[in-house]
Length: 169
Ligand code: RP5
Image 1 (spheres, rainbow, N blue to C red):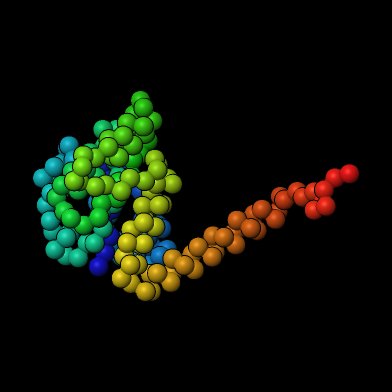
Image 2 (tube, protein in one colour):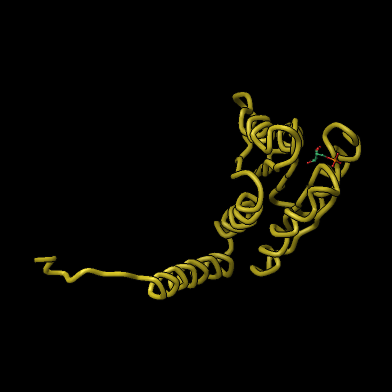
């Protein structure tokens, strides 16, 4: 069982490394390759077919500009496809967001936020999907939420300002 991370260009790697780091942190096995819906359609198709046979359960597809990688992969598999729209180009990610999210009926792509937040959330969503049938991952994600909650509380405490509960005179 593993997750596949696909990205349209080597220039997407610095952002998608955050996705990879998150999967590493959660001990989720993954593969990561550069392959493009436009520049290497055959390579993309072959990778998806082989990865599925080898045990890939979720495909994370990141691309910028006219981002068709997630949609193209969705047409090749019934495994869940998570799209990460990336910045770059004149429209700064809005082009990739719309290209990724506006899938026609019948071909779902779970589209994340643009850029870093989307890259990290793609890893978390992939883990959540695997956790449906994996108690170890489920517990890891639950612990993760507790840690996240504590961190926010601690960060708040460092800067909190309160007025008296009974109010001001
Ligand atoms: C997309 O075009 C890639 O995903 C990348 O975000 C963007 C630019 O690619 P490069 O010209 O930097 O290779 O296909």
